[in-house]
Length: 88
Image 1 (cartoon, rainbow, N blue to C red):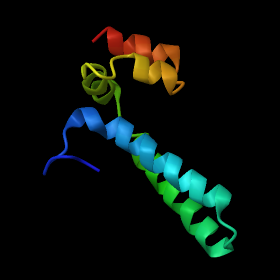
Image 2 (image 1 turned 45 degrees about the horizontal axis):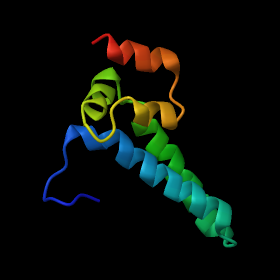
Image 3 (image 1 turned 90 degrees about the vertical axis):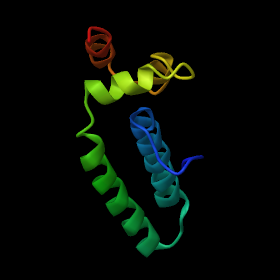
């Protein structure tokens, strides 16, 4: 998922979102019940780890000139979380 041999902090949140969106699509579109169950289990696990991200991780993403805070607005993050990150 990275174009280089290592990932950096600014990619943590966007990569989580890509993976979560993918497993949601698999769960919704698959006709195989076993795959749906597996995709939903994967989503639950990802969300558990995703919830451990914090304002510092958000700030790393916001400092990326390609994303800035527009990324969080587009993805529907809470205004309070965005404003708290801006205050850092």
